[in-house]
Length: 639
Ligand SMILES: Nc1ncnc2c1ncn2[C@@H]1O[C@H](COP(=O)(O)OP(=O)(O)O)[C@@H](O)[C@H]1O
Ligand SMILES: [Mg+2]
Image 1 (cartoon, rainbow, N blue to C red):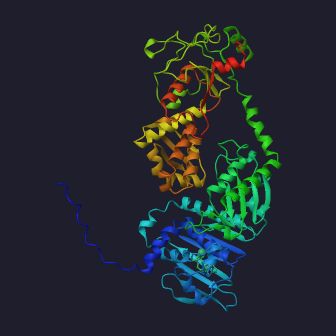
Image 2: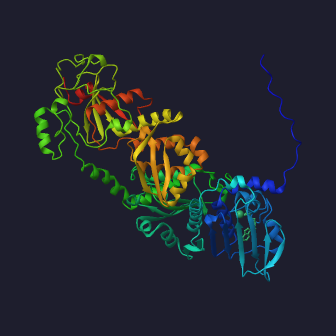
Image 3: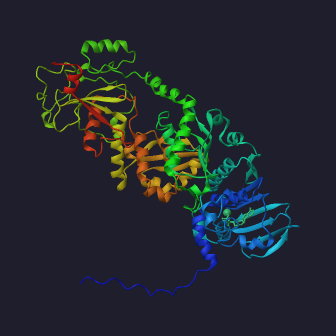
């Protein structure tokens, strides 16, 4: 008998929630942490037309956030209303909502904040004889002393919601988030003088200034010196600000600020447009730094799609994308950045020396070896057919994290057990044994569609020979794809972990520190053991076995940077594959690392065994084939 589902417990009767509870629930969306309180309160001060704003934080903002402004103030009989949900002076009807020009408009921030922290509002409206104060809890209004403007004091965040309090991180972490929030407002509004103090110490003192000076104060003089100003408009659209030249690119996305009508946003469309403008001039691992302001008719952008308003929706998204892309491209092109960068990789490529005239005759090899002081063949007995420079550094085997016994160098030991048939190379008529590399297998069978490695070209490509002809493989791209797919399967279960003999200890920014703390669980789940080793230092003690040979510090910094862009909950689900891609990219063999033939063959076998190995994670191809007939045609053989 298949039992019926158990009867539900009798449903409690329906009743309305208390206002306090409603506000506490709403606070879940708006008041995620001290930084979100600071954001709301700062934005209120900005909306009030303030010329000067003073922020004092205690204990990362958890103990206290006090913001004093010199704005328009709140009249006595509106003080209580300001703390009510859905009470706002900023919009009155749908029309207003559709063309809202203030930072706030939902009328829910103060109510939510007052529901989860001890909140006091002191304000003196213009024309009022003195100030008035209201306590959030009692809602009683009493006379107070204040010259002008408003002071919002938010103390003991989550004092009455202990479950929430547990999610607060260390003081340093919460402070880092507050600092970032302050920077955003300060960048958006250079015309307002701003000051921030933490635990009594002044951290930022920013007099009202023009954009350039404010940007320099917050992003550094270096940035400004290496950035191009831009100011472009097209009809109702205007893009202004500063964008770094490629020389100032960064390893992280830290220094990227995009404002839409004065509001800091993180928007896929805009990020994409910017990224595209930099595509040709910036290497994929580098990130531009910028502070950009897009202005448009408020009716053209919906800011009411996210509780914290960090995402927006454009009515004419294509036009906006085009405009941003072109305005930025033009600025970068005018600066000559394009030329400078396009040369860079070429210059770099002349410095490595693993170049080998692939498949040269033994005599030529000797000549080549002489010609190259760090010659490709010095330690490589020609009998082995080792054309690639053997390096003392880590090998592909290390990189894949498996001690592969498979794929011995077919050149060294062709063996029937591997399905290796030394005679069956289907050479075109008239072609005898390949004149190129006598020791190499002269055919490739079905079990090895990508063939067998002949050599490494300029430390970047693997040249291999298969039944059809020549195969060219982008070593890094191919390995990246393999690692990615392996990480995906391995991390579905419990990843096997490699303890590092010597923990990797490295310095990190406060923001990275915060991300490591917040995402500790995510990182553990992926096989990393990360712990603070000092106030600004992290120690990594273990890594996923697949990444045993990856540059740990670099990899971890990149991961943290991605992690801190999104809440941990999103990271595990939606962004997991992006994280894996980052891990794969950093774990994969770097260009210019010499591989031995066995290593190259192991890579080829791995490619054959890996799904979607045809393309790297960025969608670029990983290998290509040049058939014998294509080569024959090129050399006009047999014509
Ligand atoms: N610093 C301030 N100066 C003047 N008025 C303020 C200030 N902070 C809040 N207010 C008033 O309180 C109202 C409610 O604030 P808030 O809950 O943040 O909602 P919103 O900003 O969405 O209107 C605002 O509409 C504004 O009238
Ligand atoms: Mg507000």
